[in-house]
Length: 440
Ligand SMILES: [Zn+2]
Image 1 (spheres, rainbow, N blue to C red):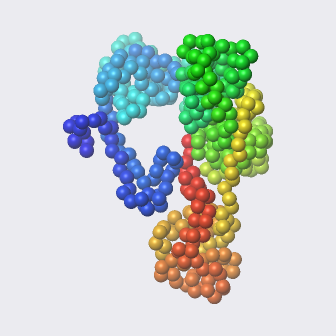
Image 2: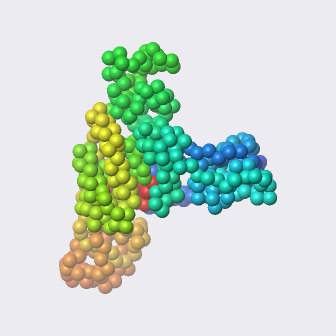
């Protein structure tokens, strides 16, 4: 394909290979909604070009992370003119000794942001200086600090930092979050600048404020009576939202869609979730970095950590979010404007708490898969049959274990019966597989 690439009538940047059998695809499942285990992407080698780095500037993201950016002498790479490239972080600049004025090699792979690969040292002009990382946020002037052990420098400005506030608002209205029709990232950014929307809660007060004459959107440029009416209707529609979407929309670091779903399923209602997060945060407060055992921190924090796939680092991030008083205030103000609907906890599976022994060969799955599946549904998988065994799953060519089960009168299941038993809770089984290993 790479050889044929130049003669194709369209642009490609790689190939995707897929398992060409639906039943195998179903067995393999997916890491997350957009990452099936039955497909793999092969990207062609990135295209490279040489150019001059004019200046290093710093960009501030939604989470306050400062990212150094290379401003380049425009150069064509793979048919696209590149003016900027990411430098990732200050350690990377230090490691590659990238300086303003340097000639650099940049590369672009697919639609990924271009990056600086290396410096062409022979072409370095006289008088260049080593890059000095800035210690303040270019957007708001707040001090920017590096977390211990991390490579990222972050602005401490929180909601006073325009970059963070607008980026958070953009995330808040994005497709997988509140997804308000007619209110895109550009709109909220403009509203923020005009002082109309400062926090997410403000979005849901727009209609009332318009009515009270505090704002005049219908009369403002780019909007008309009709479009404002539509906007208010779209906002009203979204003022009822499921808990998982709500959590995702908050933009807590490391809490992506899958994690938000896990949290919503664990705690069910908004009230339960909030209380649990406050407890976990109080327990976490004042605990040192070294205290890496959740149970030493507290029972509430341990529960949070022990949710399948969440773990210490994500739980810590959530606690850090709730430890910021302004975050709690903004969240409370927002919740007052909304109806946050409950997310059903997964029903207990029929094999939850049961002891299962697998024996013989199964047709539809390997022993390892069967074990993982049973454990995901809350069963304990044992190696030998005893009086405590609840089920023995008997595959082809089963030996002594089946015999022993018969002697002890333990319930024996054929592969078909086993599949039916775990399929009864198809939803739980599917979701645990879906969420398995997904971690943003
Ligand atoms: Zn800032």
